[in-house]
Each structure stands twice: as structure tokens, then as C-alpha cells.
Image (cartoon, rainbow, N blue to C red; front, side, top):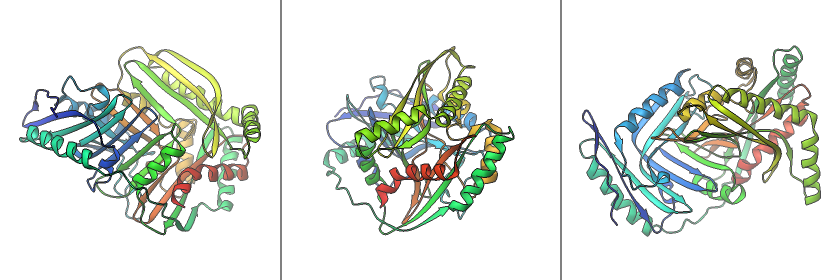
Length: 445
């Protein structure tokens, strides 16, 4: 095994050295089974990445957190020289995400204790698997950066080779459940939102619920991700364990934005129905969803808003056809959106411009956010917020952290929401939220 080498990058007294090699065996999952924090996992149908340990950490809070992270990310990568032979998929990335609101998410009684307004890390160890193979990337910093990076490379190459296959555990089981809000309170919340829509103050607002579950046994989140991969292979599966606190994880069908060069890809995902028990019923539900005036209106609000948010950056924006996205327990209206940028942009500039989309926030954005803050009686934390990665070129991909939960020890809190528009019915929206809990709940029960 010969590591790919690059020149040592030095800024002042701080050195950042990256080493990498291709490995013939070993799964990214091996990295997640360590006790090292922070940890991050990211998996799509095209690649899977697992990372652990922090060679550099970036945190921020408040309204400027997107710009602050972008500036700090540039500073980190400016002092990190990467071997030119290392393929783009295996090059070091900053992994992390943001809170939904710009306020503080950390408090003693919150499941989000340990999750700041924004947090990213450059991992000490990163394993990337693509169709082209599996790559191990390690990073060292400080006076012994080169030695540390090479030592980690040797150690982890051996660990990946010797690692036994993971033996999946059964779900831990659910001991008890506590819903916030109750169904009666939910009806009142939706009713108040509908009054605001009728008065012309809102076009749409997404109200969320929290489901707190006590588990019978200890939870292995990597096992949950493995099971989600079988059930939701075309979703973005993610896991983030910060330095302290619980673990945020999920399988989201919604991409916020992906940037490569000057090509931007995103989508509108809004309007939902269930899955049928038979293929014929499934097709009937999909056709009903496509014909629904309420769901089509909600979906078009989202698609139009995303187009408008991209136009200041783009030389062209292309809107695809509206289709039905089928998942294991739910179907959504989906429209793909592609844009070409006028000039080079950083992916975090686009993340800031797009978050929150009307699919998880509402319209007008400021009024919707005010309504969410005043209505919801729990902290959204990182739920429905951007989570993903950015590389040295400013490219990256961020998903919307829905179909998600945050867990610590034997306690997990699940989140789901529904878009409220003029024709919304509180009981139908309640049922929609229960459908959206299923991806996480099925892996716990």
C-alpha cells in the first residue's frame, strides 16, 4: 500500500496533511462502529461515506452562520493540500449541517443539546465507497501532521481489511410514546394557521410535530442506517454525532441543492398521499394526488419559490415535469429543477438562499417562520434543515433533514410536518404526519 502524497500545506504554525489510498476490502460502516466523535455518515445510490474524528472543526450561530461557515471552510481548505492523484470522491470534505432557525438550539432539556447553530468538521478518517471502488483518506494537523496522517492511513487500512462483517441487530423496540402536540391542540394550531391564510398573511406554512419514544433496548444508529438502505435506497441516508450529545439521523427524499461546477440541481417535493395495498390502489392514489387541487397548489408554491430563489444566481433555470415520487410508505409530488450559474458560486451561498424552502417553511418566508416559532411548542433543532458536505472547490450536496430523528441512549425524538394551505383539513394533515413518521418508527419498533 503506497499512500498518495501531496506537499505539506502550512499557514503560520498550522499544517494540514492529507494522505489517501485505495482499499480492496472494508466497508464505511467500520468507521461508524468506533467510539470516536464527531462521526458522520452519508449514503446515496451513488456513494457512501463514513467519517470520524476532527482534524478541524467549524461552528457558527446566528443569522450570519451560513457566511461564517463558508469563510471558515475556505480557510480550512486553503491550508490543506491534497494529493493530485486522489479522485474527487475521496478528497477531504467538511461534513455537517445547520439548525432550522438561527437561534440557539442547545439547552439542558432539549434533545438537541450539543448541536449548535451550525457545525462542520474535517475528519481524521474518511472512507468513501463508489462504483469505482473504496478509498481511505486520512488527515493530520500540527507539527506532526505528516506522521499522524500516515500512521492513521496504515492503521485504518489494516482495520478495514480485518474488520468482520457487521451483524445487524434487531430494532430496539418502543416502550412508550409521547406526542407533541396532542391531536386536539394540532387542530387548534392548524385552525389558527388557516385563519392567517384566509386573512392573506400567509400562503402556506409547514407545521411540525415531535414524537418522543422511550426504547426498550440500546439503539445502534449504524444498524438503523443499514436497514434504511434496504427500504429507502434512493433517499439520502445520513448520521451526525457531534462532539457531545445525541445522534441525528434519517432517510430524507428531499435534496436541498447539489452544486458541481456551475450546474445546480434541486427539486420541489410537496404534496403527499399514502401507498396502496395493491398495485391498482397505488396507481389510483398517485393519480388522485396528481389531480388534487390542494396538493398541486401546495406543490406549485414550492416550485415557483425555488425558481425565484435561484434566478439571482442563474443564467438559466429549467423546470422538469411534475411526477410522483414513490417511497415505501408515502408518495409525493416531485419536480426536478436544474440551473446554470452566471458565475462561480460556493454551495453554501445557495444553501443560504434556498433554506428554508416552502416545503419545510412556508410563504412568505418571514411570516411563515414567525408563525412556526409562535406555534410549535418544541425545538426543531436540526430537523428540516440543511445537512451534507462541502469540498475545497466549493462544490457539495445538501439534503433537507426530514424523515429524521435525534437519539441518545434509549430515548429518541422523531419529527414530521405537513404543509398548511387554504384547503387543508386538520385531520387529514394529522394523518399525513403519521405516515411521515413511519420511516424512522419502523426501524425502532
